[in-house]
Length: 67
Image (cartoon, rainbow, N blue to C red; front, side):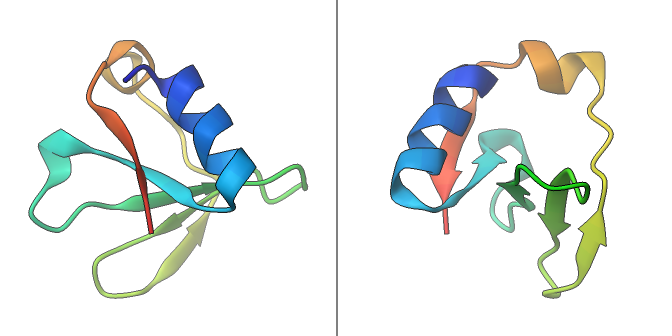
């Protein structure tokens, strides 16, 4: 699904999102309405603040709800 659809669905059920091209260990993105922006959780459970998407991330259609 597109990024916007994945974000809306994740927001409703309190989950993160990821891209299929990052499998088998996807990087989970947790959207927030805080100054932290979107929090990135790596496969090693490390949290990084402020995800900076690429153009490919923004136009991709392989997003899914994760977590």
